[in-house]
Length: 229
Ligand SMILES: Nc1ncnc2c1ncn2[C@@H]1O[C@H](COP(=O)(O)OP(=O)(O)O)[C@@H](O)[C@H]1O
Ligand SMILES: [Mg+2]
Image (cartoon, rainbow, N blue to C red; front, side):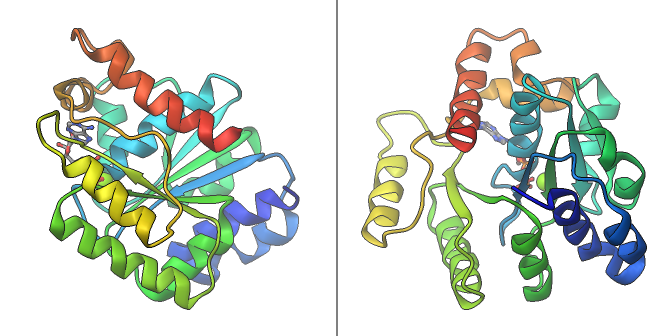
């Protein structure tokens, strides 16, 4: 993972166009892992995923969450309570990135083709959350087509907001993705109200008073483990 600081800059340049160019040249090589979270559809758990992957990475090294969504959902999450890592908006990347080992980038839905390319070039792994319903899977296939058209290989699909049994939606979605030979996390994120409580309270899900909070955290901790292993 060489030139990783450069990579973060490439991702930041996504929104700032040429504005970071001088920083690209003078960047320090301190960031070890850059994970971006993107999808063509809103409401599939991007921000929830970005927050919890950042919380997981923070347990091993200082982690920065770069909020690249103009809706600033991750920033709002942090402002409502307390997250154990720093959240900045993408315009502050140059100022902070040198101080952190890992970076997670949250993005807005429906990235333009150029943005997707910059994101793929600028990160070590692009995580694509998808819920197991038809609309979301349709949007996922559009994302995958875009990624294939730019020969992107460093991406992995994360099944999120999986409804409990007797629903078979999660299993069926996984089987479909397997048939298409797409890269999918083994871990899936279950639909648990603890995640909504966490967003409301502005904390990671492990800090929520809910009987399923630790099981909810375990889902993202396992996904995090898959990323670093
Ligand atoms: N695993 C989950 N279980 C239950 N609700 C979830 C889960 N993940 C996300 N949510 C809720 O779904 C909504 C959309 O999630 P969010 O992370 O904001 O998606 P996106 O960033 O893709 O728009 C939010 O209300 C959030 O609290
Ligand atoms: Mg979001």
